Amino acid sequence: MPFDRASRPLKAAALGGLLFLHVPLLFVLLYAFTTEEKSYQFPPPGLTLKWFGVAFGRDDIWSAISLSVQVALAATAIAMVLGTLIAAALARRQFFGREGLSLLVILPIALPGIVTGIALRAAFNLLDFDYGILTIVLGHATFCIVVVYNNAVARFRRLSGSLVEASMDLGADGFQTFRHVVLPNIATALLAGGMLAFALSFDEVIVTTFTAGQQSTLPIWMLSELVRPRQRPVTNVVAVFVIAVTFLPILAAYYLTRDETPGKS
Amino acid sequence: MTTAVLAAPRGPLRGLSDFLLRRPGVYLALLLTPPLLWLGIIYLGSLFALLAQSFFSIDEFSGTIDYTLTLSTYGQLFQLANLDIVIRTVAMAAAVTLASAALAFPIAYYAARYARGRMKAAFYLLVMMPLWSSYLVKVYAWKLILAKEGIVSWAAQSLGLTWLVDAILAIPVIGGPSLSTSYIGTFLTFTYVWLPYMILPLQASLERVPHNLVEASQDLGARPGQTFRHVILPLALPGMIAGSIFTFSLTLGDYIIPQIVGGSTLFIGQAVLTQQGTAGNVPLAAAFTVVPVAIMGLYLWAAKRMGAFDAL
Image 1 (spheres, rainbow over the protein chains, first blue to last red):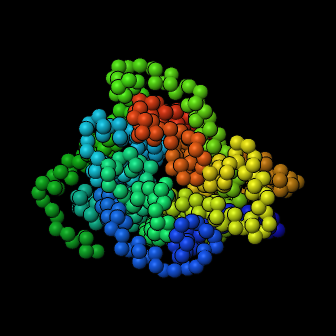
Image 2 (cartoon, each protein chain N blue to C red):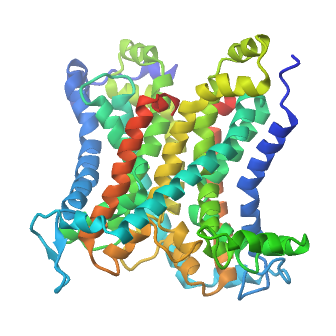
Image 3 (spheres, each protein chain N blue to C red):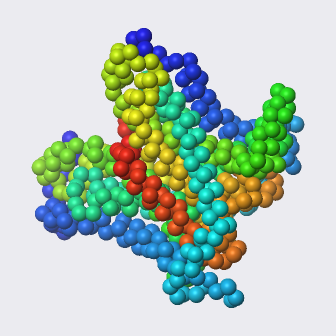
């Protein structure tokens, strides 16, 4: 077809847009190797690996990573249970309040994060809660539910109802059907949702600022370094580490659910 | 299959399973109780606690919260300085939304109409990766790029364009002492960070533009520009509005980007943070958060009327 070739300006604009999305992160990568310590001088006067060693030896970074991992694991576990329950209820049924419930699930990420953050803080203050890992997890799990829900509900809708009926007709009860028919079918979607929830929680800073006490998660640590830089190259190394840690679960989640994404349509 | 020879179970689990099958209402209630308790108590409860705070006021002398209901905190919100913050934030959100739409369109259009197979998957991943990669790292990247001794200055110097950068920075209001402390820098960073949120829904709506409509328009003698304006753009609009919900809402509530890349003037998010933190005026902070919620409420209502939710 003569009309079905992309015009040159369109190609250029699309390529330019993609470069705009990706080139800035490459600069972060480059800066992790700079020898310049006091400024963001470009081009870097020299390249070195020593900052990786320095960052590796810093206790404050390790404790921040450890807190972030604990929070992300706990929040992901809660979100996976609650998100799957909502998805199972909403996927096929019609009932009163269905629309309201799906809005309620989306609300924690549809409203600006600062609203969720300060709302939780107001509630914790009223109840005289002590700030700590528990309050961070409460906030994170709340906005992670929607990620698990989105993945699970798409898979539940694709899961044929006749499979479940066949299992029941063959004499399995509801629990057996869940264990042997439903769970194997939704497992990869749940895993993908869980990975995205983990990535979301591991990176969250806007809500965490309000729900954390004295402890720092990794993003909180980074934020304080961005506001008041102490050792810039160490921050750069941590930034590269964060890119790597979030990159892998996202890639895995994509491969686990790619039949449901537009990439495979 | 091995599952077919499972022993027929007897016992309490079987009984429970049969009971739930006979009463779908109870089954549904069991499914929904835990998530409803969580979202209802923790999330909605917190939102109400916040809303309630905005009707209290702060005692000017003791600095403690006065728990009598009053509208005076909202009165404070409408002082000139605070209105300024609201207007600045909304203007920034609008500018970021327009820029995102303009940048997103070619990517989404190419991916929806021309990319096939592997290429399409690659496009999808290339948009998903930056969407999910760390927010703080993305902001940090722009701090590096826009820094006085950073890449932009270096590139301008090597190309002999320093005068151009200086001229842009000399523009009143949007300019400033350097790129990383001006509204231009804030704007660029916002646009960069939220752009993927615009591309995905826009692409989804462009995928659904029937190709024969485009062909019909061409057969009837429309020039490419006319086809774009009268056929493609109206059909892609719901997707664009869906994307704008994200870019608008995320900009309204952000307090980190203007703090790291930007001038000393406040945006709504920063105002909330200072009021509840250093100033200790939680009622005013609560009233401030009602502003983005109200704006987003109006926005969502208008978007729903224009059919944007079908594009999500």
